Length: 285
Image (tube, rainbow, N blue to C red):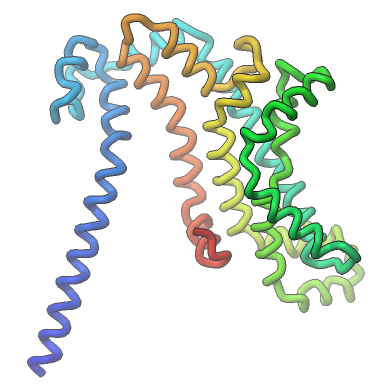
């Protein structure tokens, strides 16, 4: 009996220690975000600089939204936000359709060369974008696509990594569901659209989050292919906003960064459950 009590006590101690460690790590990653939001709400630049290296930086005094207003007054932030949302949402939605259809055809149809194509897709995953940025720039320039929306969307719709994730997921779907749909007279596209795609919500959410994060923070390619505020996303606008300030007004910079970060947090909060489920089911690390 005493041994059982001791074992239970050790388990509780280990659990408390584990949760304490997780809280410490969570705060470690959360503090920069809290610091950014608190700094953006401090309209007094002198107070912000004075308290920058002290715990008082997390408690803005005074509190106001003047920094956000100044960001909108200094540059067309709404236009940049629209550009980012439009480019990223179009890329993600088109990518979900194209990548899932390609993966479904690879997972369900047997044809000569399928294994070679899958191996080629896996091999493409190791090629960094920087290695093909210049050839892609020359190619899109020949098409006359520079300084447009589609030059930032079309080259990134298909992605070998996302095709492979969908491919692995579709391989695990039971054939019995598709056989039943075939007996009922459904075609292969109907099976993909009405059976396979609704069942792949976890991996859809995972790919949507990964695709969104990749292109929301994309900087190199938009900087190479855009020439003005008409088509530039927030990442390039942030660099222009930061580089055009002297001396630096950190409250406005933090306000800009906060407005860039909020959409990412909202997306992850909405899709968090499905993202975790996808990690558990597909083995993503």
